[in-house]
Image 1 (cartoon, rainbow, N blue to C red):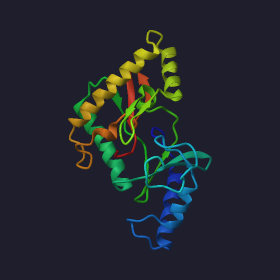
Image 2 (image 1 turned 90 degrees about the horizontal axis):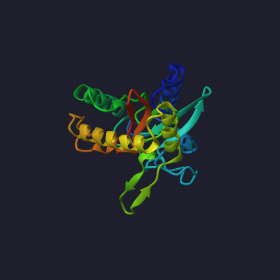
Image 3 (image 1 turned 30 degrees about the vertical axis):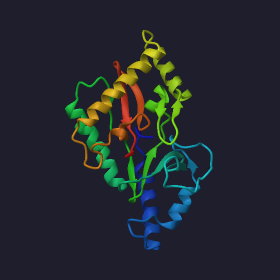
Image 4 (image 1 turned 90 degrees about the vertical axis):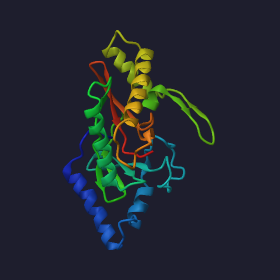
Length: 231
């Protein structure tokens, strides 16, 4: 989803289609062309924070339904409906925050990499699909709100840890999970202290466990990649 590039021709086609409908419908930049919106509602939901079923698929504004999947030119593409900031600005802000962090914390016990994403108009972002776990998938945790929900380790998280133990026989699954938990906590502390973009200042949740993917493990360090998200 975040680490592989998409073919330039594919991105160009998506942008052209969006601009065409924007022009035909005379849609202002603040709104989504109606035909684009209807098409997006028909795509399969791929939001990690939402249900896998097609229930409420027409909803594209609320959490759990903003990320969809489609196949273009034989490639699985993830398309995200942005919120809180225009897609070009959001991508640049996240990438800038990663650059700032890496300059300030070159000796961090983890690696933080920039996501690869492409703005499609003002309201959508396209990314390649990557089946890697989030921090939340691995460490579980508790989400508080109207209801307190305890989350256990997801199968994709368990499988990821088991693959790592095969590559690092001296470590076991729980040792790796404990290190990941501590490393992510350090990441959150470092982000709070970083000169982040004004829109993100005082809002470290955009690097919360559900918003950070774990792309690998190299030389004793987990590789973290933030999702393109504000919350």
